Figure 1: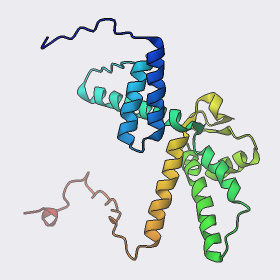
Figure 2: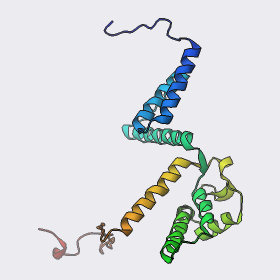
Figure 3: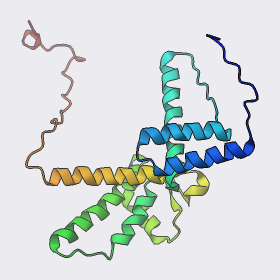
Figure 4: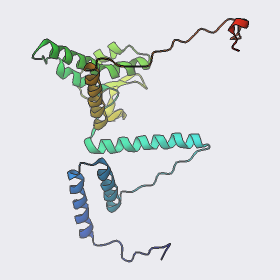
Length: 222
């Protein structure tokens, strides 16, 4: 009818469903469109019975929006992890990757300088995370590099050195890779740019005496 649809014997043959699932998986591998891939993955999930509905609620509209954003972030991170796997989080994967550049030299001085810049940049995230937690970044970097264990790292929440994967401190490999590639792209663009226009940092002006009230008629606008 106009408002209702009745499906009779809609389960279908198991062999036909499995064949369709295999076909969709092949289409996902072949497509180069992110949009098509997302829609095919949704179709695959429905056929395979892997569909879930997450209901988000809250006392206010702001709270609901904030919770929904968290769910969206978790969903996107899970999808990225399903695509390319996971790596130890907290900047540890990038720090471990920097060790591979320790013995690499370029064909000329410019390339060698570039390698050194990339190596320092790979250490920047974990240094910043440690400093945000109130810990000296250089000490954290040194302790982690001493260990050959790929999952050994610093948990900023507990300020402990642990097995990050066992503690659940992980990042989708796709996110880490994409962030590094995008950073390299922007850095390369800035290097080849003659001039860049940025917003000048604003210095916070000191509050005037007298609890912030105008000091006199000269301080007032007319």
